[in-house]
Length: 245
Image (tube, rainbow, N blue to C red; front, side, top):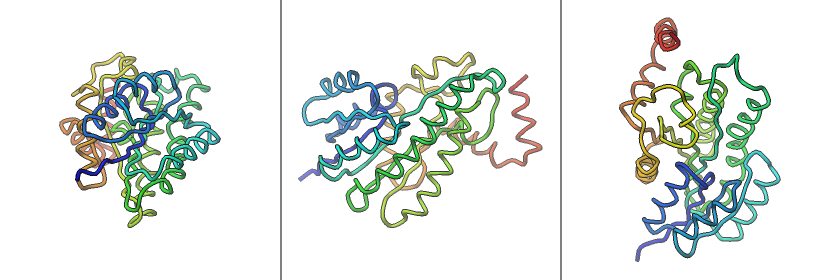
């Protein structure tokens, strides 16, 4: 008999999260859908069919995260938690609004920390916790600004978590490249190797089903970025400087 997985997707109201919810629903999973926008979650759940739950959460608010974790716990053990919630505001560092920068840190980095703390006890034995970083966190590129810094922090956080929970939880890192969403549509530059949310969702679901620590895509971008990270600074910073010009 086919086992029905329970998957908690955080950041499911739109973009990659909504596409991933559709992908997992098509694969027969039972979903717990979370984000700040309850109305969008309810609308999405209605389109996906029965047996899906809506649990609103603001990952930047620890009380909201704890309340959501209690609701999820009452629904029974979870097979996978996939945390995708993030915000983005492009621009050069000198042009950023400091209040917005602080909000990005709170949502992207502190929010990931909150989920890293509350999710493991909700998982079945050997369950999976996947947290979304970004190739933007691989290296400090022009206009990467505070978003990239938070994603670098998330990568470090998930690496630490992988070691700390070894043998208990299957910790995974998701590192997307450019995905066509409402957030990336703010960019005023050509995005190399941009893919659809549907393609990103399939890559995530397939990658989390297979082995390995990091799910990164599309490879034609991510491998180039990984190579840049391996170079000595005298070479990598020179290449980054050319992008600025």
